[in-house]
Amino acid sequence: SPLLKIEADLFVDRTGFKSMLLEEEMGSEFISFNDVLLNDTAIATRIPFVDKEEELHNVTDCHAMQYGWVWDIPLWNRIGTGYCYSSQFTRDDLAEDEFRRHLAKKDAKRAEEAEFFKIDIRHGKRKRAWVKNVVGIGLSYGFLEPLESTGLLTTHENALRLLATLERRNGIVNKVDVDGFNLSVDNDIESMKNFVAMHYVLSEREDSSYWKYIVNEVAPAKEEELYDMIVRSPRLYQEFTFASNGPGSWGALDGLLYIAAGMGHTPLGKTECMYRLRDGRHK
Image (cartoon, rainbow, N blue to C red; front, side, top):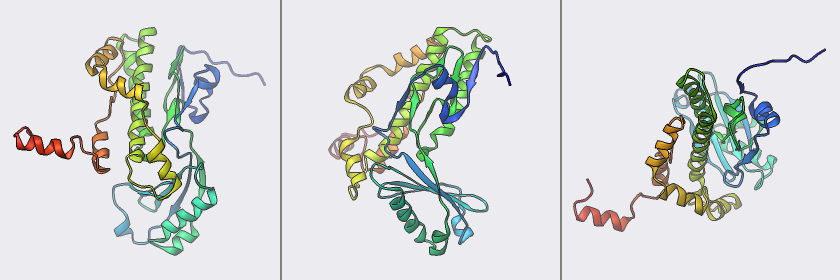
């Protein structure tokens, strides 16, 4: 049968990891984040409650493991849980054994009966989110592991950015608009990549080959990138994105301060804190 031909002024690629339009047809190169985010595999399962009154709460629990981390998401009728790990440092069968031991801490029978399904993770982004008349939204543009649910955030925010860009001049779009959109979404996903990476690289753990490598070898930003983030004026950046019709960005993500503090890093060193308190400059 003949192929169906569809013509449109703008196509939004929502084909997920395949990125059939943005990457395959428009050639927007995939840039991997695997040098910073090492977890490339997950095994997930659905388990019943043992004590629903105790286990049903309104937050997701995350537990650090030997080769990654486990999520526990209480739903109304069950718990969704999974182990996100790096295949560079452990095998699937060893990860499954470690995960079952983790689940068995609360209930051995539940852990033994759990059935796992495997998920391959492809961290990264496309070089440009908007190419000619194709815009990638969601997984077709980029993805980070679900440690901070950034996939939901980027999908939501980038859809709103696209809408704002199209509405700004009643559908009139030129290269300035496209470049502004690409700059904003790129800055967002790069900031989120660094934010997620900080959960690992600031750790004090060195009890496995995985953690030893992360804390000693992985840096979320290269030296020249740190220079750019620190030296370049944030105001100039904001003014440029505004002038180029690029909506505001998440920038450095203030949440980094809280991640750092939880890992023992304070914005000011102990000596400087004492100095400021002594001189009354703490307000």
